[in-house]
Image (cartoon, rainbow, N blue to C red; front, side, top):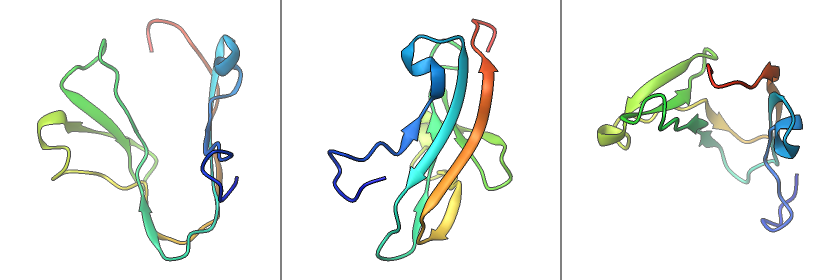
Length: 98
């Protein structure tokens, strides 16, 4: 974590970042000066080119149409002033079925 954007690395993917077989997801955000909403999503063009997937507050991924994404954004966390340090997924095997 760092308040300097050039030094901040808010998301880590574990061994996958270095070509490893397992994927983990870590989020580390420093304290904010005022409460914010945090959004965490991904796009899997080969799996579903029409949707983005956002992690919701229940820990489930929710599909949101690319066409309506700005109207239907799903926050992962709401009114957070931080810090946020969480491991969301740990050692998920990476293969082309995921």
